[in-house]
Image (cartoon, rainbow, N blue to C red; front, side, top):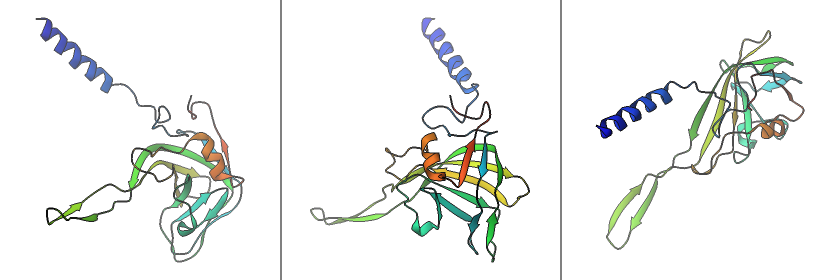
Length: 186
């Protein structure tokens, strides 16, 4: 009888835990900005021809090849790449929705086991980055689709999402963070 009661309590507890609303800005894996947060784009940002994103790091815009992937960074994502330069004009950006994604660089390393004379293929995980993917709207600029902010690429056990103080370092003078009540973590 006691065992059945214990099982019932455990099942009900697990069910109730699943009903708890998730707050995307709380906890270790939380996003630094929540829905309703606002950012002021202070200067024109240029998206190169043929691309759909412009990277921000250390308060500057840069291309993917010039970026340090082992430091926090963000990028604005356009709806599609165009054969001409696209610009993101100064204006107010609103965060509509937020999710946390993981991106990974995998590697397959062949390893020769000499003693056994076997060829072993070790399929180990490479580095990962935890990214805050924010769907956004910018007044009068419907082609600006998302803002993605990433913690640095790191080994899976060391990876962490971008943090509030790191956003300021990434944006510098290019983007000013304006937060409304309920759109910032506690």
